[in-house]
Amino acid sequence: MDAPLPAINASDARRPRISIVMPSLNQGAYLEEAIRSVLMQSYRCLEVIVVDGGSSDGSVETIRRYAPWLARWVCEADQGPADALNKGFAYATGDILGFLNADDFLLPGCFAAVADEFLNRPDVDVVSGHGFMAKASSELGTRIFSDQWDVARFIHGACVLVQPATFFRRSAFRRVGRFDPTNQTAWDAQLWADLALSGAAFHTIDTPLAVHRIHPASISGNARLRRQRSIDMSSIQRMLRGRCERSRDRVYAMLYRMRKFSGHPGRTLRQRWFFFSTLRRWSL
Image 1: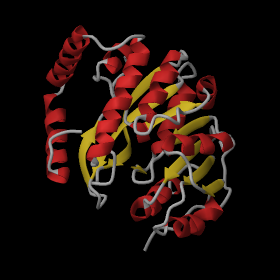
Image 2: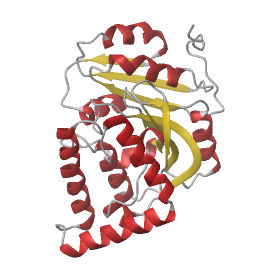
Image 3: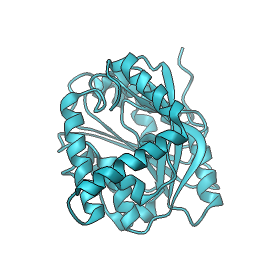
Image 4: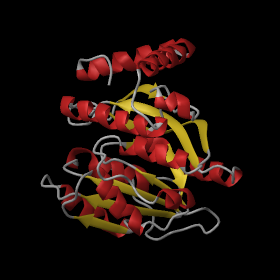
């Protein structure tokens, strides 16, 4: 039997308010687990907003079942995940913001760890933790890690933040304004780039906070979406460089990635093996 949910509208005024926006479209197989992973956190000063893009797979019935614990929910057609996130964050009132795709889920204690880090580091705007990859069945696989933020390494594909384990101050997001709705696959990386350009301070903590699920319908598992993500990432890197890619950029990218691999070769090999055992290929 599922554990009971916390009392509705319970709060703790001593803690910063956290707002979580959940975009979803036909993720009914995973949506309930994602919602419960948020609501079952031992954290009461919480606002949850679900934005469904017009699902036809029973997702809306699931959302309605949890509506008493949601600050707001929307079910209507949108222009993609970035557009859905813009809708959700327009309603968000929290001091700390985050977003969780409906096929991912949070680990216990996530919000407490994040809130403590923001309270203890008033100079920090973005906090990222580590996490796990999981199979479609929710079985946890290999660990995944957020890197310490570095723009040069990010431009060359050697700096990664675990998206569901990354949170940011509302004040920092206001400087950015919104997600780019034209970015269909790398809206998270676009946000990190926009936050960096706005002067945001990044910080990574050595704590697993969230789980990224790998399955055939995800961006990681869909060949067309993977190709589009490559295009979207190239656009972000071009924006940060201020110019098109040159031959030397590809050389630098190889060197940065080799340096990252040599520091933690076991991480990369375990992740490659997980991709192969799950999706029958070796990488994203």
